[in-house]
Length: 217
Image 1 (cartoon, helix red, strand yellow):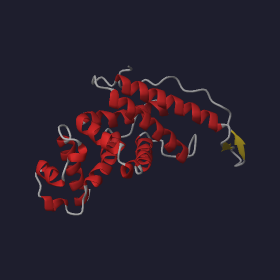
Image 2 (cartoon, rainbow, N blue to C red):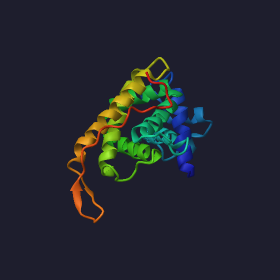
Image 3 (cartoon, rainbow, N blue to C red):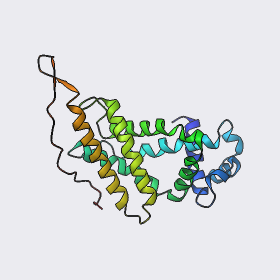
Image 4 (cartoon, rainbow, N blue to C red):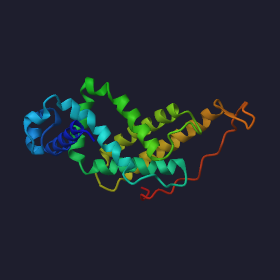
């Protein structure tokens, strides 16, 4: 990681700690630098928006923290890696919620959110070993997983009991819905035969329900 990336990470975590008691929009770079144990000059060229935009990237890294996912089905592997992301966010819940509330009412930050969602989805697929075109084009998989992450985040924001019940239920529902959409789309996505010609794939039945390592809600 480059030095500038280290500073952004330190600044982000310091800001998340401060945001437990101070609204995200009221944070200053001076207060963030002091919380991080750094000089203001260390953050020269950075803004609070830079720290806000680093939020998704930082917590996306948690999805690959345990190495390649080992679930039996694609849905199970995606479930496990995406839950790692929300578990990591839980450690900074008050600050993360403050950041999200600020982001929700700030158009310049909302405009970047679809790009962040797509990046999160692509890393989730990579962490689950699914970042290829098998089953469906990667672009479609990214779109589906991005929707699932967004829906799960809305549930996580309401999940205040620490047991992830709402979060897991929302993620499972979103991944199942995405899987169903992909199965319907497959009839329009031709596959290759052994001789290289193309023919439509038959519709497949969904896999058995996943057996995630997390307790079902």
